[in-house]
Image 1 (cartoon, rainbow, N blue to C red):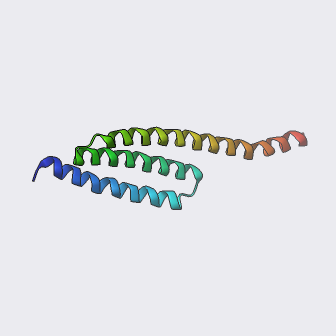
Image 2 (cartoon, rainbow, N blue to C red):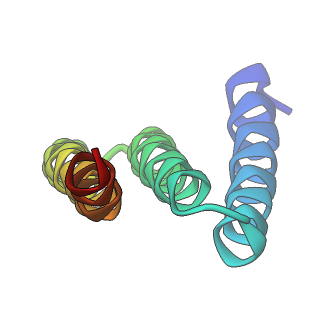
Image 3 (tube, rainbow, N blue to C red):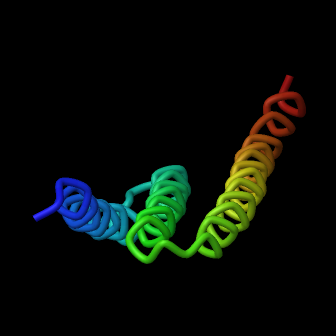
Length: 103
C-alpha cells in the first residue's frame, strides 16, 4: 500500500473525528464564544477535508472549493465575533447607565 494513500486515509479519519468533537462543543458549549470557536474549527476542518479529497481524487476543483469555504468561514467568524462584542456592549450599557444615575 502506498504511504500517501495511508496518510490520506488516516487524515480523513482524524479530520472527521475532529468534526465530531467540534460539533459536540458546538451543541453543549456553555457560552456563545465557545460555540463560535467550535464553528470556526469545523470550518477549518472542512477546508482540510476538501484539500484531502483533492489529493485523493486528483481533481483541482476541490482546491477552489476549499479556498471559497475558507473565505466564507473567515467572514462568518468575523461577523459572529462582532455580534458577540455588540451583545456584550449592550448588556453592559444599562448597568453603566444605572450606576451613573445613582450618583
